[in-house]
Length: 192
Image (cartoon, rainbow, N blue to C red):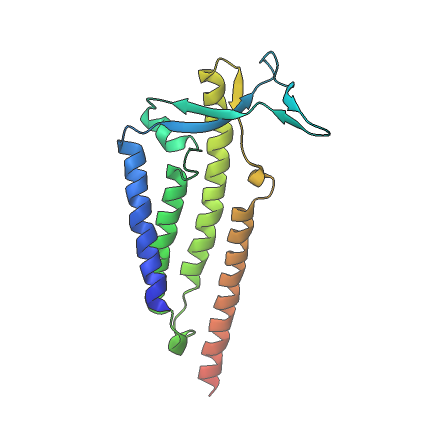
């Protein structure tokens, strides 16, 4: 199992590095999900009505020649895998690769690995706040500016349910549990 996790971490590290470098250095387009703003003439009008449902206008805003900052900070909806997501997975893969040599079933509580576990939790929380920051302070104003206030950035609802944040908090809690278990194990060995 150790080699499978290590192989998976290396695969993610290499794949995400190639994707991030390709997205930043290549001439790829950036597709951003948008919807009409309140300044748009028919922003609240449904495109099509059905029995008790309606379809509203929403689409993809494709930037043909994005600048470096747009490639780095705009969420790319074309592949749902943007540079910030790649950087998160690269960081987590590096932490997992550093953590793995110290984790095996024979010596699970022989070394205190709680700082590595804690760093995974903090990484998830920090990237969650970076994602919110880039959406509210870069993506939304940038799309509004480029489209002359006719369209706004359309984001999926995960900000309302911050799974990445809660996962980070859970991992911080597990880190604390591990640290307590490690201390108890050390005290038990000293008592014997």
